[in-house]
Length: 112
Length: 116
Image 1: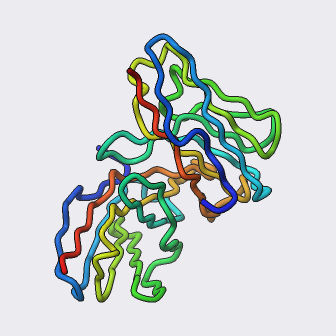
Image 2: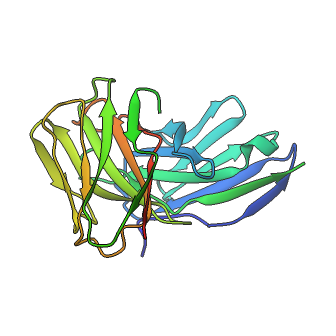
């Protein structure tokens, strides 16, 4: 079983819609969770970090964390074609120091 | 990527050659990491360093070597022992290397290595 799992996609949504990206993790003791966006051929850039159960909003982005169910999600409201990218979920497992384990990423396509 | 530079951007290597990828940072971050990314895949940790003159193997260290002689620099050598070195190599830094919650990792622009 992979430690961090994401649906590889592609997830296709029309412009203006809400895109919902999901990530599950296996280590129940994980403490820190991150969403990165990666455009084709480029390096990942941080979108959101979340540490506590619940929602965290930043502009059009909302991260949701449910530690009991071991999932973290990213919602993108009013999706734009410029949001088309691969979204990587990263988790800091318990007893892993500052290491991050990355999921394989979900490719999002926003169609005009 | 900000204050993290990686060079070269593209690198071509013949089989049997060792090559060294550069990673430099001016963020004064303690921790530095090397990841490998294959097409359609996530990131896999090769090596990491939390302090000068110390580094640890990650999940896929075989065929790679690193050094951390200065806080600002963490070069990665891909040796001829690495069987499938063609990949996108990413260097990352992190402000602190101690107790979680984890500080964010920031990535350099990457080096794309192709073995001919």
